Image 1 (cartoon, rainbow, N blue to C red):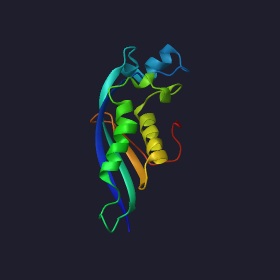
Image 2: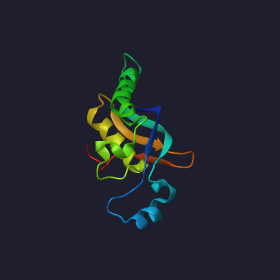
Image 3: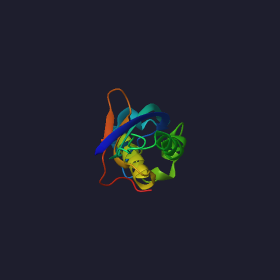
Image 4: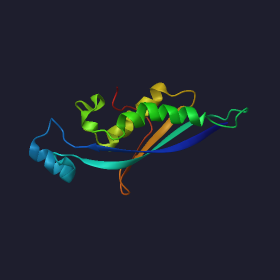
Length: 140
């Protein structure tokens, strides 16, 4: 039997939406107020959905403590209270919420075991949320 578990986390970070391959005018037109040279911040809500067989001994898909520890160490400590533009992972990439979401998925897929990563959902504002369930994202 395959079951899904979704866990929710929060972190605050800042970014500036600005592409080096676009002119200043194209950046302003494309990203609007999010292209502010001083950046801006969000309180992100991150949902991580994993799946697997329910362990008959524990009755769980995965060890919640292990999932929390992995997310804390590999995602929240890195992105929390950071200027995302300054992170090596975003060198040459715009730190849009879509790109953050795919990056988080890739980090989980490469390193978290034994459950399988199904999807990542990242809520940027109460009006914007992005989901990613695999294929190709930013590779670290």
